[in-house]
Length: 591
Image (cartoon, rainbow, N blue to C red; front, side, top):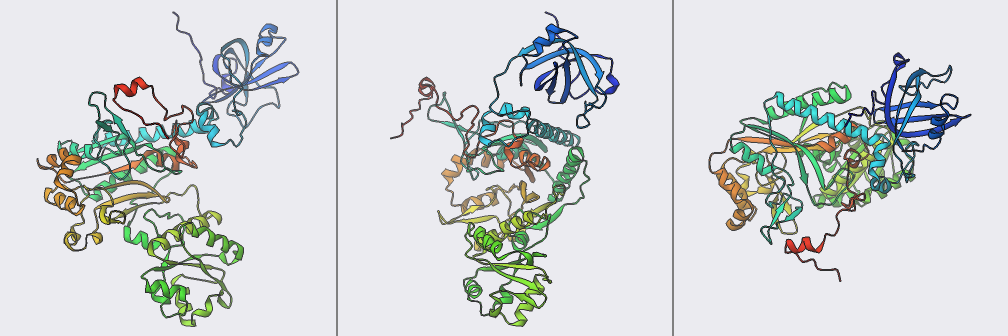
């Protein structure tokens, strides 16, 4: 066999300096045009477009063959690079000053008419795009994002190699040790009735690597969670996972910040400023109503409880009596917002269970609203000072249970920022959110549950609270937030067996259950465990932000829908009865 040369150049490579050269190109027919018998083909590959031309007076047989070419056929051409005719150069195309005068044509593959145009920039329903994902890729944007994602991965790998981290692949088939979401289970043929679980994260394995003495580990890990989806979640995703022994939180923060500096310089040409801002979980919730605040704009939340307690406004007074939260935001220059728009805001926050939206507009004569009559001049003055209110501003207030007030104002704040163009696409605001609660209350089971995972260390200042008020105890957990997205999460791990036993007891885990779920890991902790900590950063989410994608599906090659279904391959699907028989599984039909 001979080694066939399919191309000497890509379709985005040739410039006027190549005029006179003999070249070989291959790709897809992007567009076909017939101008007075002369056939022009825009030939496309992932690198760009090159115009190739077939002239009837040059080779009539070749011209007739080109006359049958259609969109998305895969062809190869051999020809000479020539300058485009005067006035015909295309300044919008990198190869726009040249074209290829074809001497030889090879048709590699014919194509059916695609379900949507590849060449036209049309809005196409996402379900159709996902069903024909391979065709959607040819339109270019997905390929660009996947290329960027690959560059991010490479930059990460190079960075951690330079910092003496060892890349280790941890198992995909493991034991079910629930970490907050449902596991994806894989039945075992060899051990009927037993199941592997796909990892929600490599958490236990990476801690075992520290116990084993590896010291510095990382991997780009595939993770799986059977949970309800949204725009920035998928059932299978990839994270940068790392763990370090004998290192402090400050050391980890500095390491991740240096890595981000390298990635952003490589991908965006941006010099990030370090160190990143740090904010406790309590401060984030108080000022922004969320543990993943978007810091690219203002409109922080201000608590008004103390200021308004002397008012006659029953809506606020009722929440003070019930130990709820009254918070406000200042929409700078927002006094021009119509009453109709305010009603829309009220309807919007009702989706987050808020019962109403109070408002005041700052006019020349002071705050005006139907509710100002319930506040005396001194209280109104204090409210305006707290919110730094000036003439032309709009003040918005929500009163309710703490969680509802925070959630409603967080979402309203983000919506208003988008509407008023307060968010700049090329601005990247990182923050470390620290000192998360160690536990949260599970109303369904009426017990405490881990806010992070059961191997997270308690804040040393709060050790005494474990016996008296565990829900007030802080952890040594932290998140990295970027532009309102949780980019990553980590913690210092428990390495003291006594503290680990205490956490299990607070979670009401019986010895048999501990042994069943975590036995091998608990035993490993007893053989000398170094202080260690780690973090996991979402690669998909970072790529989404860096490419300005509208959702995480646009940076994953073959994603699932919001209902975890693969429209292209129709997965999940039924399997053959013989396969189920081998696994000793019987599927009950729906009745």
